[in-house]
Structures are given as structure tokens and as C-alpha cells.
Image 1 (cartoon, rainbow, N blue to C red):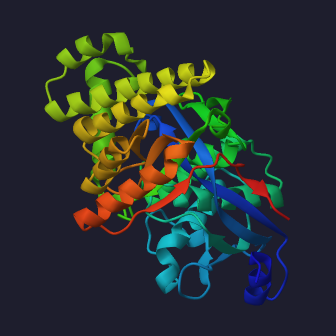
Image 2: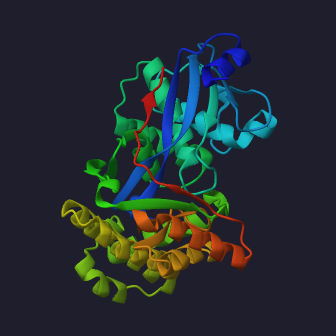
Length: 386
């Protein structure tokens, strides 16, 4: 049954529309978005799909095809950040659409309630922004249904506020911007300081290349404090250096900046952020010059920095990078918040199967759960389906 058909079976009437928003994978630029820096994500074909109708009684009803349990019913006037949600097993995932309605109402938008049915193909806990997809599909649907007139970047900011202030995860805006603004066949070069962006052609197939996503199946959870600790350390570094955000530290001045920092962990975090901003700029220059294959070593550099300076990798992610590069990949790195999740591998098309097999073999020999490997196909961002 279609998502619209499931909605009608649940709520007794057809939805007013169906919307979709994708997950994303980030090519380069990690932990830079909340530092006002550069990122370069692309949307995946995997999407969260929402069938939605308006309500006018201050009630939100949400249901997920992917989570056991019935409809979660919430009173909009009673929504509070981090408050336990009614509805039993649906409480954790329901915080994302609920947070969007809360954020819209907090901003003064006249949203009076909704019935929502969701289904998602974005892997959860894989570092591919399943939560951002839920938020963006919800805010896009409500923007259309209530005629709010918000731009795509404005939708992304509302979705980010839902995750930051309601759910309690201090993420940057990259995930929501990628889901809301990406276009097919392109990567999104985003300046998170002012949300300006450029769509960069990213057709690897025409250059005989492929970007693989390797989902380690190690679940990560960014709300457990480790992500917040890195963010706090970056903010401490910015204060110590007298800048509003680490984006303002030029790469050429990095050695001098590091010499001014006394705390070892803060020094490592600053080194990663400033150097990763520089890696994004190098990647853009290589792509603009038509030399996509040369991006590979930059990816591997980025992984070393995430592993050693930011310390957000894990044995499974390190093994993906090691095994892929040993099997002839051009480069690889973990992607997303880390502590599990996924890696990206840049590889010549003719070696893609060999590299994927080598990673699978390495996981088996290490006694790890078999990874899921699939190509990253730059796909369309959020849109109305019907």
C-alpha cells in the first residue's frame, strides 16, 4: 500500500498531499558547520516520505510505518522542549515532527495542527541524516499546506531549531540544508556562516569514478554528550582565540593559533576544524578543475584528522578506510557525526566491486557485522510528490 493509502486507512480520509525529503552523505567538511565553516554534502536517493493533512484544533497526530505502535497524539499547546511525549513507543521518533511544529509556532507561524503518516528508507543511526529528513519533510509539507512562504534555507533553519532546541541535539545546519536544497547530479557547497551555497556538478560516472557509502551498522547516537563536548571545545577554542567562530581562523595562521591554546583537547579540535575547512576548499578547487580523482587523498586526510584530532572514529570506520585504500580505492573517510555510522569511499568504477568485497572480507575477519555498501547517487532534495 502507498503512503497515501496507509494514511487514509489510519485517519479515515485521503491526505492533502505527499512530500519527500532525502537523507544525505557528506563528501567533506565534518564538524565545521557549527563553526561557521564550509561543508559539501549531497542528497541520497533514500527519503522520508510524509502524507499530511491540516488540522485546526491544536492537535498533532503522527504515525510511522517503520516503528511499532499506534498513532501518537500530541496537544500543540502542551509541547515543551525535551518533555516526554505521550504515545508510548512512538515517543522518540515523534520528537522530530513535533519539534518542527513547536519551532514554527515559536516563530509565530499560524500552524494549527496536522495528521502525519511517515515512512522512511533512510537508514537510522548510520550518519546519513535520517532525523533531518523527518524534520525537513514535515516543515516542507506544513509550509505548503499553511502557505507560510518560507524559502528553502528558512525551512532548513526551522528544522535545525527543532533538533537543537526541542530534541536537544546541538547539530549544525548542514544536514537540513542538504535535505532541503540539494539538486540531482550535484553536491552542495555550503557556507554555513551565511547559508550561501553553490550547486557543484558531481557526475562521477562520466569520469569513470564511483562514490561508495559503507554503512558499518554500528549505531551512533549524537545526543549522548560526545558530540556536545566537541562543540563546546570548539567554542572554547574560538573564545580563547578572540573570534566568533573557528571559521575566522585562516589556515595559514593555524600554527600560531595552536600555540596560543593551552588545553590539549581544544588544540586538537581547533586543528581539525581549521584544516577541514581548508580540505573543503581544496576539494572544490579540484572539482572545478575537473580532477575529481585527486579528491581521494583529501578524503583520507580528513579521516586521519577525525580519527586522531577530533577522536570521533571507531574501529569499524577505521577498518573501512584501511581496507578500501589497501584494495585500491582513491581515498576514504568516515562521514557524519562518527562513533559509528558510515564512511565514504572514492574509487574507480572498475575497482568498485573489488574494493567493496575487500571491505566485507576485512569485516568478516575482524568478527564485525557485515557492512552495507551502496553507491552514493547525488539526488533531488525535498519536494512535493503528489
